[in-house]
Length: 446
Image (cartoon, rainbow, N blue to C red; front, side, top):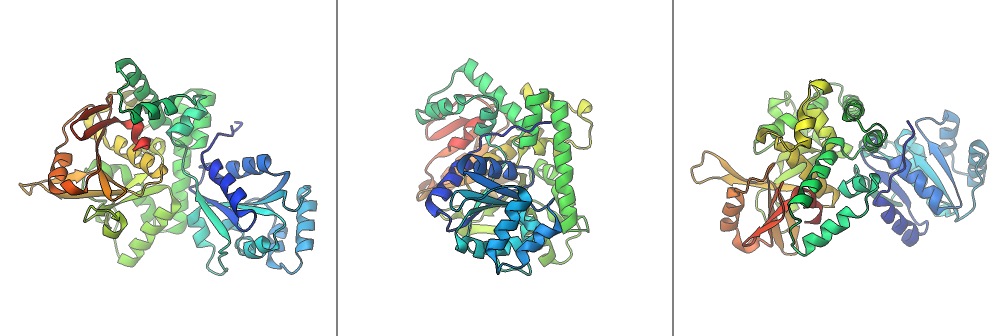
């Protein structure tokens, strides 16, 4: 299947790097596998340079990899690369792409000298977890500008569908705090639910555009999930990381105040569990939201490293992971979600998409819980945003249900800390006093 080249927001940051750094650093694009790093790097090189040379270290010969073991003669190195790849390079007008650079650690180490030489620009791609596992014996170059590519956000998804109008109009109405109206909001929410099912993995989006069949898309997502599971098995042959990964939907479904590792694996040595969790976070396949013990400005200062929730970076994959034990034809979740008939006990799907959207917009993830007056249950603020010298508490509902006991209790407990209060739900925009009820697709605007 021919892959489309999708418009990505990171492209503008890459242009900024090229313009401002002018060859003084290499660009490292990191992110989970299959998010489109290689495609984006090559498209950028095609459009922004007179010529480029791409070295895919997962496929290139050992002979090419060995060229980076000896950098004493850069003229010879560049000559051999041009002859091998049949590409002519022009100083300051050409780029060299090190694709999947983790597969050739010496090429990564060579960046320092190559950048200092100054003849060409360098773009590296790789997944952070793989890069970490292959750098033990090399000197990490400081001459790198690092950017993270996430799965396609909702606006990028709309672009892929040929729609560059909807999201700017939504932002404009939100800035005016203006409702959309019944007919419009129904369409906007239906369109957004399609994004929740397809997700933002370029391969899944491309499959949807080609086949217009969610069963085929589901099969592609299952392949990606198995790829991630295999990656976790490589870093942890015991299978613990894989089990922790598979358990994400179930843990969210429990509506507990934290991810309970002890219910999934035998924890063993605490330092080993912490290493596994760090590897999972570095994979950028999952997102961590940490409990803020004191919900105040500077949320990272008050984060509890032992109390956290885990989400998937892509909600399309999350839906498939949650129901991977069933064949697509037996799975009613797609029909229910598209028709807005999702049962209340599946509301964690909406919590995951809100987490994904907040993170893609550049926010770190934090939440806060505290006991109710009876002590039998907890109040919970699903997400906290830091804005200026104030915070914005967010509660997520999977329906149009407007009850917000946790938000109200939080307001009573921390009245001087709050800038805005948000209830994210599946109805039109409303405002009641200082509480803003925001349709879920506007999460990117908060």
